[in-house]
Image 1 (cartoon, helix red, strand yellow):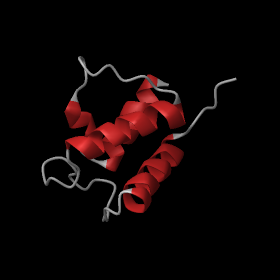
Image 2 (cartoon, one colour):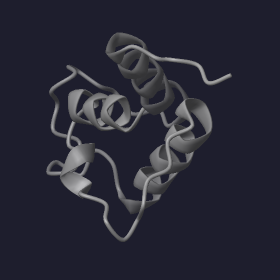
Image 3 (cartoon, one colour):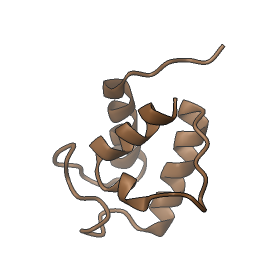
Length: 83
């Protein structure tokens, strides 16, 4: 049975990964993560892997819109749209 995650739970889990596991401070859910080089390509791959495992969301790298990783809010939108 697939687990349903609401947007706030998704945001919380993504933020916990970035802050806890990757030791990157997130000041707000709208903080620009990509444009400010807060996350790099390696971190992006970790996020994609985490999203796949944690939320059972498959992200197609060839069709990926990397702007979706611009902030905690846009990542949460991406995950909740794919569920």
